[in-house]
Structure formats: structure tokens, C-alpha cells
Image (cartoon, rainbow, N blue to C red; front, side, top):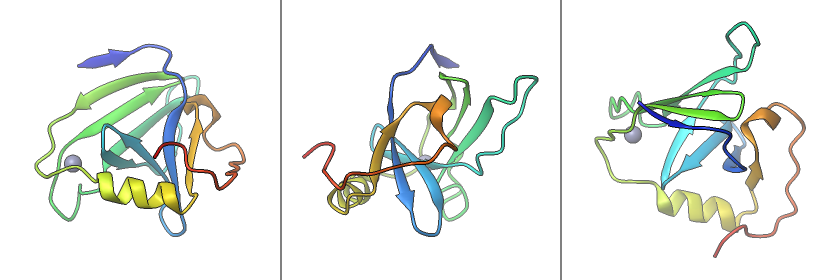
Length: 112
Ligand SMILES: [Zn+2]
């Protein structure tokens, strides 16, 4: 299992109906943002194609530490969707530990 300690800011997509989505390496993950663990800082993420394509890629974050439980996707990445979200101004950068706090977007693209 891949473990990235103390991640910096990540890219999130503020989706109108789907809540907060996480974009990593052109793939998109969703979470119900329920917090688990003794410190209530453990959050589980699953690929957005978990149901439609039965993709089993998933992650877990504990505080700002990222644990890649399974990084094997059975489909291509969602870069177009991420770029579209970027153009729409619904991409935000924040640290995992800041999720659930109010999110603000300044409608400026994060990357081109
Ligand atoms: Zn996937």
C-alpha cells in the first residue's frame, strides 16, 4: 500500500449534486466524508466508477496522510471532466484536514 505522509493541498471538485470529489492523477474519487477512527480523521474515498464500472480503486486518508489502498482502475482517466470543472470554476485546492470546512472558490482556473 502506498503511503504519502502529510500531503499538501489536493484538488477537489465541488459538485452540485455529488458533494466533494477528489481529483488525483486524472482520476476522480468520491467520499461521503464520514470520519472514522479514534481521532475522527479517517476518511474513505472510492473511484467515481465504483458502481457504474465496478472499479475497485480506493483510497483512505488519515488527517493529511494518504493511503492508496488500490490504485488499479479498469477504465481511462477523467481528465476532461477535471478540465471542465476547472473551467467552470468549481475546482478548489485544500488539504485533506480542511475538508468539511467551508469551501470557497474564486472562479479562477487552478491550472490550464
Ligand atoms: Zn476507477
